[in-house]
Length: 305
Image (cartoon, rainbow, N blue to C red):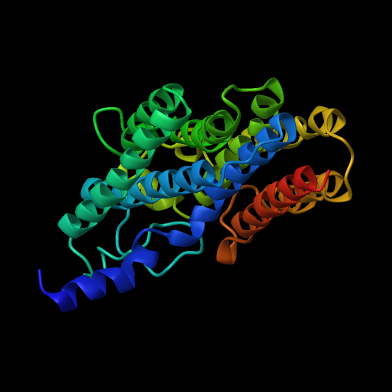
């Protein structure tokens, strides 16, 4: 591979790996770390940076593998760009080969594995167990034989990884144990990520149906999926109420409940359209705003207590 090709891959990497979505997992790391700081009073920069790097590598590897396997299995045909859904389309446009995608995924996975071994040595063996479980789930999300995202299990799997696994794992790295409060508040990012994935399936519904990718929206149907969206919305914000009561009050922390507004608006748009895709995927954008607003204010509120 020549230098020009390598530079081209580097230039395309943010798009191919869907780099902006990294904010989802990094905010969860911030939440777990903030809660550990509140309870233990300690904050180790070295452990925090290793955690950020490891989770980033794992997340990007999963994104790359998802595009790679969806292309191989025919779930992402060539189409105009879709906000937040439909994959990066880098392979479909001929900008990269599937082999190059796989190589980048393996490189990101190697970074994640190296960080996991370092953290296991420095913070405790539970980190390695969580990393192995996360790696298995991340690979199985898109790849055979389990191919969870095609069996209606991908949404909850992603929610579990972004929520309880990342938040509790980040807490454990700093504090050496896992607290009930961290587990409770980890349900917030977990449910919101599951909700975001489901809403982003609406624009891809016809392509997924044709490819046989039986995610929850394909299995239930666009309109019959709406009650599950409402349940995920409740699951995201109900834990905030007892969680905030257990934390000393702070204006940003209490303001985290304002994230319910864009999330409810997204649900309302889909309800009014009876599950039909909305131009520009406005519901998906609103859920992404809700995730960032809710978790960002919650983390800020914990640090300012």
